Each structure stands twice: as C-alpha cells, then as structure tokens.
Image (cartoon, rainbow, N blue to C red):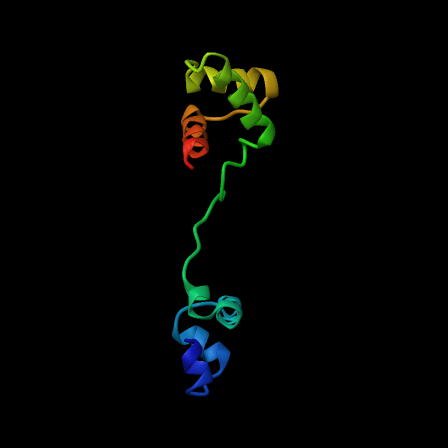
Length: 104
C-alpha cells in the first residue's frame, strides 16, 4: 500500500480504499514505516508489558514472607497481599514473579 503511493504515484486516499483500510490507518502505517522501517509495520504485543501489579512494594512483601519459612504457597501469599496491601494478584502471577527473581 505504501509502495503503491510512493512508487506508483497513487493518492493516499485511493491506496487506502484499494487496500481496504481507512485513511487514518494509512497515515499510521506511513508514520510507523518512516519511524521504524519494515519492523514498524509488524504487529506489537498487546496488553501489559510486565507484572504491573507486583510493583517493588508487593515484591518486597512477597520476599519477606518467603525468607521467613519459604514454604508459604502462592495462594496464601495472594490472600495476604489482598488483605494487607489491598492488591489483588492471581497466585500464578506470584509464582512467575518468584521464578523471574530466581533466574540469574
């Protein structure tokens, strides 16, 4: 679509219509290509990029409880996080965060 405009000289509106996208989508693709090249046109992962609920305070809380006896389960940690800090976290998120901490 971008090539159709730059090489073939088609109008941006015509190219967008020909390829079945809106003009704003064409302009977004054009800007992404100008900024990042071909990689800018690749789809980006959606959603949170990290453990946004398990911030430094929550991880410090988890680590303190793990240092105590180390046998506490993620489900119990999740319940304590909610009751003491008001943070609702799935137990599996806690397990993944602990595994990330163990990796060198």
